[in-house]
Image (cartoon, rainbow over all chains, first blue to last red; front, top):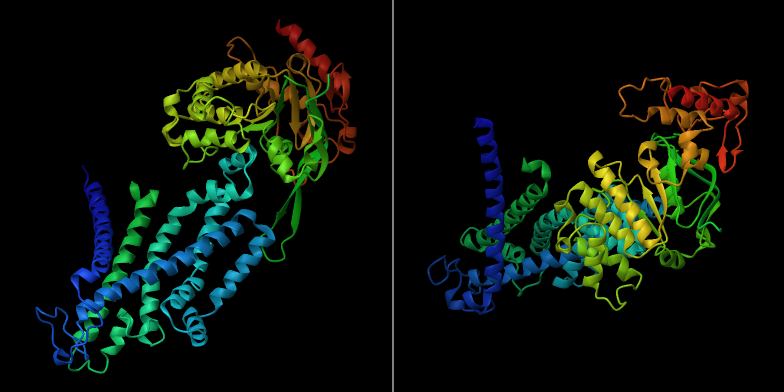
Length: 280
Length: 336
């Protein structure tokens, strides 16, 4: 056995370990969010006598300026983050897959129109677009999810289009038409399942992006509105007392960091697993 | 007898556009004014080098691509004039077998789904027999086992995959099957098996074939008539024994000479063709074959020969076909 061979196995293991770590992080976030009401209590329970307590056994992550338990609030905020992440990415993926598929399958002027629309959407700095839209609409959590979704589908559309451009030349697509399939069935039943790998990778990475965007919006006060807890608005709430009560901002910040890292590691891992060049 | 498939003056060009800014677009004539017909129960072979337009012709017959001009009449219906719903219904009678068994089966579908789909699309899954029985029967017809139904295409060998492709075409009991080089991607030992299978099912189901191939050796065993294509045009069309016995076109002659014969005593009498196939974007004037033709005269450079009847049922497009016919006859007598 050559040392190159061993090195190769080692590097694959490292890659998979990171992906595995990402998977564990994502999984534990799900469990924590799911068990929020069991592990924590009432996220809105105010106890002024206990305000600004440092981390202790009673209050794992301390309490805030109203005496609410930071750990409990973070558990409920995890629900918000996951919800925002998945719904926003779901919307973006649906739009992106649909437009990308039409664009790649039909080509010609349909492709030109859709791709120019993608270019136009990419021209707007999406964060400012979101800010502008939120200024008109009520900043509710559902509005946030929809707007993040509506402004982040362009990458998926391009990915799916590229996949379709190569897949539509394959004989099985011709065979599907020759057998008597409608275009809709050819696109969604025959080609799309073969184009899902990159979509899956981009969706996993997209969840991380959506969570970050939601945190940023909440940090600016136009995202999830208090008293509903979100990691972003907890972060900003701790700003005034940062000098005396560091735990108010530090723990939500860490939670954002770890969660985003987890999704990114998992996404990279999924890409490696599906990439045949990585499997030698 | 009335032909099952009649093709008249069919043409198809593709536009090639240069990606560079201000690049010119040129047109490539893939199929140039071809006409032929196929009779029920017959196998017509369509032969030619790569890029001569034979696969395009196959796709035009099934209207998988749209023709520029000309007509395809199948069973008294003009395929080019059918609405998309009518065309989908008509696909029940017109099926295709593909060249590459590795790309013609959807890698994400099980054999069961691949074979059940045509039946379901055409409402043939409710005729007394259960779908399961129908599918097992199909697989047995093409020499596979019913236990293969729940496997994915990548679990099969090339020959087995081609059998699945044949089963898919056969599922709807079509009248005409366009076979686009069905064996050229297979091992030589498998080629004969697949050809035999195609002959068996032709007899069993009364099929008509348009059999596309790039060499005459494969076609010899299965075809009743053979059409030879060169640069988008049909240069010769005749019953198989006449093509092999007394060809009337120098291109066919060259193709025949290129067929390897396992006979160590046979001496090589023919010169192989000189040069390459000219670009179809800018084909030679007159007869497209003249730059490579050993018989070419001045007239060949200016006038394109018509496809006309040189002998009974034997059409060729050559100004000097009588020379070739006489020469190949003398060749035969000397070799005997």
